[in-house]
Image: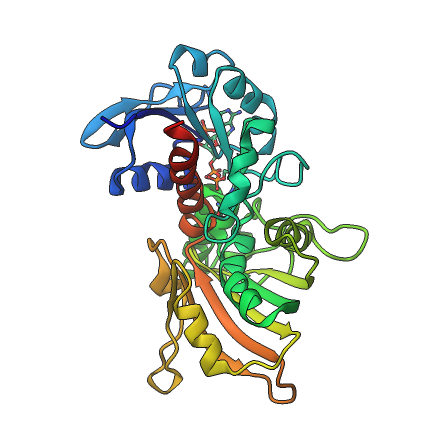
Length: 344
Ligand SMILES: NC(=O)c1ccc[n+]([C@@H]2O[C@H](COP(=O)([O-])OP(=O)(O)OC[C@H]3O[C@@H](n4cnc5c(N)ncnc54)[C@H](OP(=O)(O)O)[C@@H]3O)[C@@H](O)[C@H]2O)c1
C-alpha cells in the first residue's frame, strides 16, 4: 500500500488556505490527515473537510511535532513563515511556502512544476520549497515552451491583478466600496488594502515602490523569472490592481532570438502542460478573469505577431490567482515532492 501523509495547512481560513483545502478534496492526494492551522483569533473555528468538521488549531512552534506533520503548506504571510517554517522543518516536515519570504534565498528552490520540477531535488538543503508570486507563475508557464522553441530574449508585461491577490480583506474592501457606490457614499469609503479606492478604479501600484521606480511586485516578476527559468531574460513589468475579485490577466510582449510565426507559437503553447488556448477573436473568444475562476489551468489568447518585427509576439494570459497563482501550484509541488522523495 502506498504511503499517506499528514498535511498541515497554515492560514487555513485565508483566501489561499481555503483554496488549498478545496483542491486537496478534489484530487487524489495521498492524505492521512489534514491539520488546519491559523492564529489564536481563529483557533477552535470549524471548517468542513471531506464532509467532516475539523477544528482549526492555533499555530505554535510545537504543533508540527505534536501532529506528526510531514508536509506543511504555509500561506499566512511572510513574517509567519519566517518564524514558524523552521519549527516545521525541525519536526521533520517539508515546508511548501506561498509567501515571498524564502523565494530568493539561494539554497531554497523556487518551483513551478511545469517549468523547473527538477529543482525540487534540492529541497533538503533548507527543508523548504518556495512557491513563486502569483503573477510570475502563470507567466512562466507560458514563457517556458516558447523559450524552448524560439529562444526568448525579452519580456514586457502589464498585469491586471484581482483584489484577492491581497487577501480576503481586500476582496471585502472592493465589495464594500461598490455597495457604498450604490448608496451614493463612495466618497466616504475607507481604503486599507490599497493606496487608493479600488472600486471603479485601476491602481498602477502593487506593493511598495523601490529606489529604481519599480514596485516590489514588479521586481518579484523580474527576479523570480530568472531564478525559475535559470536564464537571464530581460524583463520589464508594470503591475496594476484592477477592480475584479479573482483572476489575474497579463498582456505579454515577447522578443525572441529567432523569427516566430503566431500560428506556430499557438501550436507550441497548445501542447504545453496545463495551458489552454482560447483564441478565436472573430468569435470574441479570448481568456478573461470571469472564465478562469476555479480553474487549475492557465489560459492564453490574442496570440499575434508584432506589426513591425517578426521576432516579437503579443498575447494575453489569464489564470485564477488563488489557484494557479498559489494553491494549485503549492499542491502540485507537494504531489511532485511525494513522487520524487516519498517512496525513497
Ligand atoms: N492571495 C493570493 O493570490 C496569493 C498568491 C500567492 C501568495 N500569497 C501569499 O499567501 C499568504 C496568505 O495570503 P492570503 O491571500 O490567503 O491572505 P488572507 O486571506 O489574509 O489569509 C491569511 C491567513 O493567515 C492566517 N494568519 C495571519 N496571521 C497569522 C499568525 N500570526 N499566525 C497564524 N496564522 C496567521 C490568517 O488566520 P487568522 O484569520 O487567524 O488571522 C488567515 O488564515 C500571503 O503571504 C500572500 O502574500 C497570496
